Image (cartoon, rainbow, N blue to C red; front, top):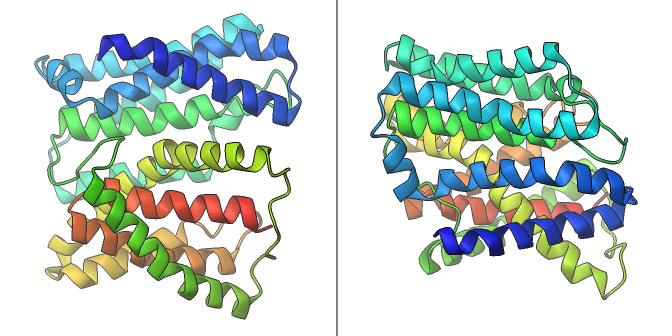
Length: 320
């Protein structure tokens, strides 16, 4: 796996370069921020490599938690020092948040109440957009807070996978052929339903891709894999991999757990744009049913990640 790291870094740097060109971000800012993004990408990559996670799990839970906190603050330090925006208050805030999640199951018992509280904490931090105030943008066009969002997903996932040791998630970055097929099928099944609902409630407007025919395929690929490995990975892990399984057990009914999780998934989208964005929340809830069905059939979030990433890409490229 080590030999693949240079290729991984090259792919990340290329994607960052294309994104910077598209957004008009100065090259000096991009070069200063690039090492931090490559570090975060590498740390994020360790999530999907089971052999690396297994090595980490040889350490005592408290030791794993301490390593997670150090890994959480490292990208911030690299970025803020290079960009001249380092603040001790921000470092303390990032360390505190990461410490809460990393040591959660070191201190608390592995019981449903602790599980629910952790997911509530994870969601609350995302919904309140805390990282936008901790990661100061060197340029308004560079969303530096993405480092915090990726760190938050990574730290929470590690705490659940390597400290709590949750099972039945099917965690990973690359779907199997069967998972690709299941994810694509449920996307195709979902598309006419969501499209009809979006038209009925007046959500968004369909339009051809805004970019040229040469740039559009590149943008589609970037949106898809960015959505697959960040947005879909995080949301599908917490909603389908964890919450849907837990809800099905608590409610003692697999279908009730699936529907309840889809409703909660829709609810967390209410603040999107302007609160309450009920149209987007309703569409997200309906889409969540299909994500849940993909996860149920494949017994893996990698299938629902495909459905989710295809939905995200379609929304970003063809709707406004």
